[in-house]
Image (tube, rainbow, N blue to C red; front, side, top):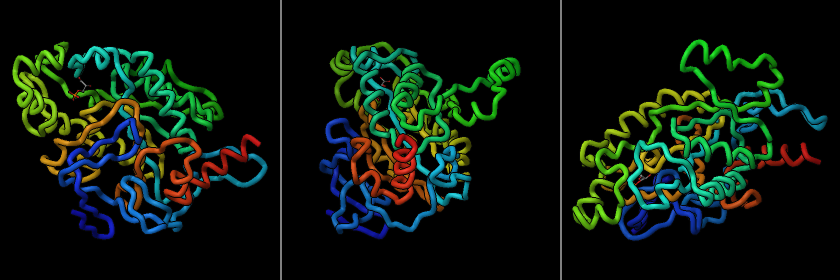
Length: 333
Ligand SMILES: O=C(O)[C@H](O)COP(=O)(O)O
């Protein structure tokens, strides 16, 4: 079934999944509401991909590109900004199929590759500020992805845990600051706390407690795992943080990347895509897949996952993304 309003589309889908195979929203078989998917230029609706309306103002302005002698890059007010969400690459406990939650484990070599691949996909998309969780796997992912970015700004973790940390990490050159991207780390974006499941093998837990029970702990909105956080509890901190700390940057015209976790991101996507507590059950996020939203006039418009840096449709999302990519092209000529 498919009913559509101008910015709201209901599709038949069971699994609302951002996956690594086709890198786009994959639809299966139950009702899932997709927000702002809209129609492509050709009139064909593609999940997660929309062609340009062609009416937006410059998206590159807040990035402060240095003048390359081919034009003036002085900041102008932008009416839209981009938001990239990315779940960390495969962690060493993902590989072992262990419940991880708030245990701070690093990426595997495959996770490193996923982060690098993700970076290639978003290397032409403007990024002014990065948020990560307090956990190493999301920070590794953000840093590795940024190594691929064509703008070559340096991502720098901000340290505000004490006055001394703040003053000792001060940068004394405006030019150097200009060539940096602040990375803000926040525990509120951490993975949901998995309680007494942390460190347990997922398959063994399903064998012991039953598949249905474990599925409810993992995917339901309001059933917490034993002594852990439900998605609702996780949303309480992650979505509040997103609204209080991330949205103001977007409103100011900054382009933002958030590197976080399966469940902190599920709660944020639930909020952005206005999913119900039933619909969020089938929302699955693969590791290392960047997801792009455009923030415009207070609305989040989901634009799918860029497949590659030169994928034409990415730059058909908005004229502004194409302009930004063209500016990067001209800088390397
Ligand atoms: O914490 C974990 O184990 C994973 O990062 C996410 O687990 P899930 O797929 O069980 O939500």
